[in-house]
Image (tube, rainbow, N blue to C red):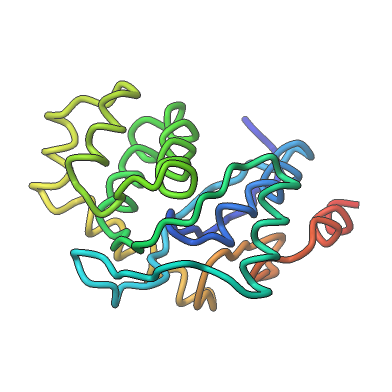
Length: 192
């Protein structure tokens, strides 16, 4: 039986703070935490066709660029912000049914959005990412057609809200809710 401490992290695949916070997750995992990533759609109000954002500039974007650079993550801001519901829903099914493939799926979808400017709002694109990583097209169709993928996403979000989560990224560490992009030192001190 695995006695590793458990940490929960709520993420959205289109949240730049989640993207750059992957280095915080690595701190937890390298310290022996079993990190469980759970979906939380940060902006459900974005229409199905996405939302044009345009160029990004200002202190917040400078900070995110710096964080990405320090974590060796490519960052090329997409001009459109897609609705992430479908991508989160099927990624959660991968986590539940194919946990060994889930990290690669999550990384592929983050990279698609933040480095390659691919459309995570496109079901065809997202399905292609999953099938490229070994998930069968029929299995994906079953998750979607049965409604299970969206039910599980809704359940994850409701559980997160009951825990106090209002946005992403958020972690539950030893009963303590940590919200937002906290410095790496915060996670290192927590472990120490």
